[in-house]
Length: 58
Image (tube, rainbow, N blue to C red; front, side, top):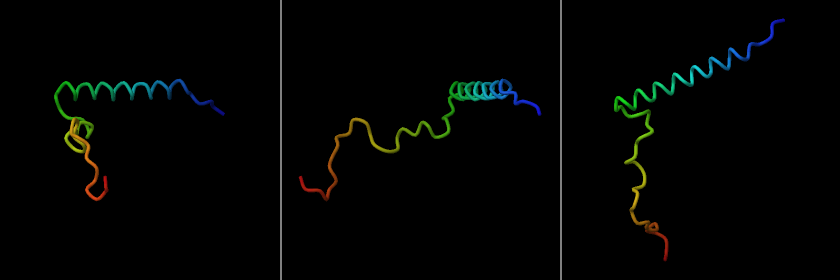
């Protein structure tokens, strides 16, 4: 029975990781937004004063 070639699997995983990183840098250099990572306007606003919900007594 043949033994698994772990070094080959590791190398393929490293190459895929490197390829993904290069693609990300290329997208960033072109100025295209990433896959939903930069939706900064949705959600809370930085610097806004925190107010308690309207129905809670102070």
